[in-house]
Each structure stands twice: as C-alpha cells, then as structure tokens.
Length: 206
Ligand code: ADP
Ligand code: 5GP
Image (cartoon, rainbow, N blue to C red; front, side, top):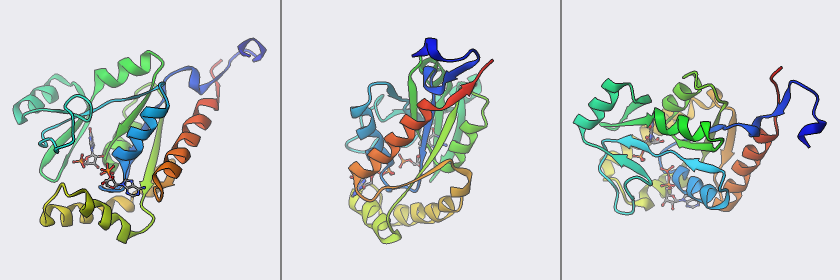
C-alpha cells in the first residue's frame, strides 16, 4: 500500500503514538488498560514510578515501579522523569527513558495519569503524537460504588479521592476524547476505536 502514497505522506501509526488515559480514581483506568494490553500486542504499558505502597493485587514492575522517597528524589535529580505529581501525599512520575525507548521501537505506549500529568505529557515535547483520553463513569453514584467496592482506601482517603475527582472532571475540555466506562468491554472497544483511528491518521511529513 505504501508505494501508492504520494511523496510526503504517511500514516501516523507507522511511528509510535502515546495514549494517555486519565479520569477520576475508581473509574476503571487500570481495568481498561489491562484489557487493551491483552488484546493488542502493539501496545506497551509504561508503569509509573510511585512512592505509594503497593495494593494487594499489584505486581512491582507491571503495575508500578514502587520506590522509596529517597529513590524518587534521586530520579528527579537525574532528570529521569518526564513529569511528576503529588497525589494524596504520594509522588507519582513518568520514567522518560522507558517511554521514549518504546516509542522509538515503533510501539504505541499507554500511560495511566492524573489530569495534570496527562497535560504535562502532551506539552513535554516528546517528538511523538500524544493522545489524551478521559474516562468517565456513567454516573457519580457508580463512581462512588466502584471506588468503595475496590476496598483499597479507608473512608477518609476515599472521600479525598472523590474531592479530587470533582476537580478532575472540570479538566475534560483539555482532552482529545471522552469515553464512558459503563460496561467494561464496551469501553475497551471505544478506546480501541480511538487507537485505530489515530493510527490511520494521515500525516504530511514532506
Ligand atoms: P482506576 O484505575 O481508574 O482507579 P480501577 O481499574 O482500579 O480504576 O477500577 C476501580 C474498580 O471498579 C475496580 O474494582 C474494578 O474492578 C471496577 N470496574 C472497572 N470498570 C468497571 C465497569 N465497567 N463496571 C463495573 N466495575 C468496574
Ligand atoms: P493510584 O494510587 O489510584 O494508582 O493513582 C492515583 C492517581 O495517580 C491516578 O489518577 C493515576 O492516574 C495517577 N498517576 C499514576 N502514575 C502517574 C504519573 O506517573 N504521573 C502522574 N501525573 N499521575 C500518575
């Protein structure tokens, strides 16, 4: 097919694309990402570095790189993080080398970020397209049910996450796509549609 294209034109998917998934805690970001990775071998998840302690089901190196405060300070001083943010008293950051090396290999990268981080990555001058996807719950009541049902926070931390969620919803205008996570497989199919469309986008590169 490539030989049929006029000069100076390619499809965006010929090179790596970064897809950033954001949205309120408990909306289902991790669940959607796990399903995407299982279905599309071109996608690579880049785990963040965090000082938050692991949750029971989380696997170090798969879900997050869990590090001490001192180690996080060291990474910051080295300039190893593309961006970082504090969330509920813990620090979270995006390892620059991991993201860039996968994009350079032509893989599409999936990132799980809070809204400020998503925006920071869009503006980081990565040299690769960055697509921002905001995941919303079908209702506020359902969000509360999910975050409570996950059982990973005590009531005080849960209430703080819900306060942060209100502020995050106000940032929807900064995003490229809005996806409702009502039924998990339907939400995954919607995100896959975005990924496919972005790969087919025509880029004028001449
Ligand atoms: P996040 O990564 O956004 O904080 P999780 O992926 O941990 O959210 O999901 C929060 C909880 O909601 C989990 O218990 C998960 O199993 C559940 N969940 C995720 N998506 C759905 C959905 N579409 N319907 C019902 N429950 C869901
Ligand atoms: P959790 O503790 O629920 O895993 O994550 C808390 C919040 O931190 C979520 O909104 C998640 O998207 C965000 N987050 C995870 N990693 C990073 C990161 O590297 N940078 C930023 N800015 N946010 C992150």
